[in-house]
Length: 234
Image (tube, rainbow, N blue to C red; front, side, top):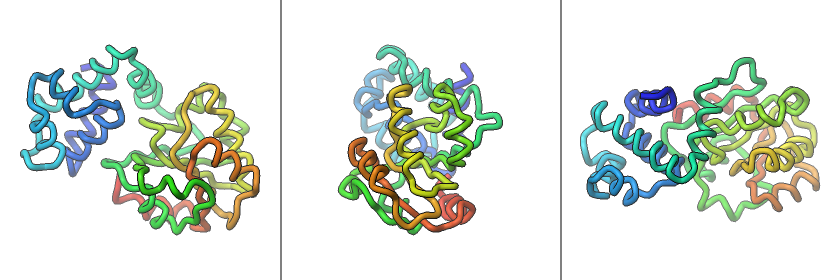
């Protein structure tokens, strides 16, 4: 198996909930149960049974076929997700001024906000239909001043369906401008931006969030406390 396939297969095999991990990766690739089942030559109910835990944990042969199918389907579509994951997961994050955290299963954005004792300032109406599959803890100043447009992609880890949690924030304007500019070089925006250490973001930050359809949240919790509260999902 190639490196990317080994990384994904390893996460599924070592997960405390392999079915949820399988569902997460299928959704990250944007592949339906029926499409995956058709590619594998099995029934959609079999995929559903694995993902829901109704069927016993898959063995390595099942995981291997599952992962390879995801990669093959994506490559038949042009390979966009595979290329992104290879940049993020295979090349690593050496000496980056941010920490990428992945969840073993998606969690509702509303629960994420509760965990970090957040206040929502933009696009609160999106919370009920938003799932997060991870978050990135970011040193705002170092990232904005040191990270190139090419390295910016690494902030998104395995998927943009995540929260970017910015520390060292004063008004929130710079992180949101970085998100807006980053869209032009990566075509990605996060589902949520969390500004740590301020009570209220400035007007420009809120307007950018509204336009980019990003849920904007503030919290006064310390970064270490945030990580501790979210650790059970990793």
